[in-house]
Image (cartoon, rainbow, N blue to C red):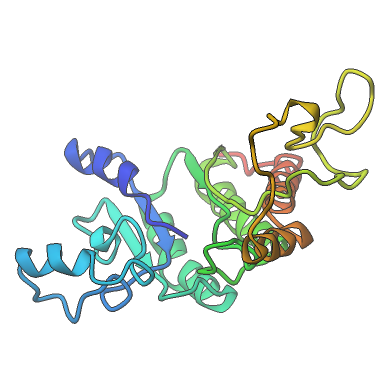
Length: 233
């Protein structure tokens, strides 16, 4: 959901035509607190702090593409399946095919999920699986299926709850299902473990389907693509 400003900064500081950076994310001039693209520097600095609830970190850097080696696709206030699908078909795929990469690296972030606490995404775990499948198809066509996935953000992690039996996480030493977070008896007596009702509601929503399910769908589709014979040159 967030623009990958760090990756873009690294590539832009030492621009090399061998690299293409693509980012689909929530954002746009209005969403980041700007009336239009003609704002001066002072106006930009003031606008960044206009409304903490409307700005999408890290701000405006993902609204435009600084040079041909960067393709930024801001998708508005909320990332929806239809907007993301349109971007993949109409903008991302043609750009990648033209670039013809030798390797595709995915920054796999899942905070555009519909249950993420920030509420700026509308995707399901299945949607992330579909996106993964599309990227794998690009890799099959352009670089014989060579793909590398790096886990990024996604904050709807079910905490202090039993996990489903088929969760892909490894078993603990005694054979039981490993928990994401279990403070147990280690919780200090001085620590208040009461959860704000609004936060509890958000966490409960995350538990319905969240980060782990997204990762599972992503990994599943990566694994499926690796079993398909890549085209030989």
